[in-house]
Amino acid sequence: MNNVEKQKALRIKKNLDFLWECTREMNAYFQIIQNIIKNKSLNTDLIAISPTFYQYTYNALILATFSEVSRIYDRKSNTNFFKFLENCKENRELLLKMNEENLKEVGGSFDFGITVSSEYIDENLDCIDQRLWEFEITFKHLKTQRDRIYAHNESKSFDTIKTIIEKNSNILSDMRALITFTTETLEWLYNVIAQKHCSRLPINIDDLDNTLIVLKSVFTSR
Image (cartoon, rainbow, N blue to C red):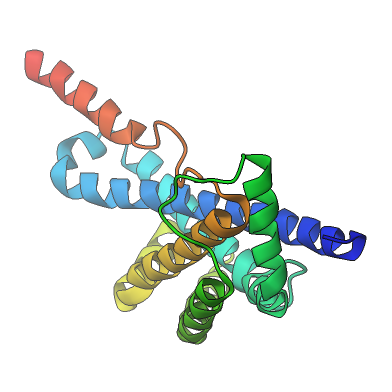
């Protein structure tokens, strides 16, 4: 790679790292949201010990997830998913060169089970581009619901969020679909240009489940 290509490659990698950190945050928030919802059904008596805590935690995590979704998918933000993928499409050959540079660094082989070629990159980027249009509609829907939460009540109370989600049952499924698509796309790009796997979630993200198991055993032993 020449100096110009090296600068472009560095920018792509930097933006990829930034978007991955945002996506990892989304995964963590949404995992805890799902854990709270699950345990409200499975461990109702234990959740009822500290209902206000779980209500406000749920409230904060919904807003935090909305915030990360907006940061990644808002076309007005400096580093957004649309702009990043457009940059990748414009530099398809550079992605291949980044892959080849990494191959040289590790002695010419990777244990990822894929052979990266121009055709492989083109096919996947075209597929991602087709799906991205669908998810832009999903993002616009989520943004509308987020704006409703903020406009409805300045305190952004738990009851307000709960009501809006109950009236729009696809909010959580839309969040899940958008997060999954973003995660899988960025993972693929890491495999192509950096040849590495990244952890989607922090260690011990299921601490709530483990805590409630311990709490249940304490109550059972009494």
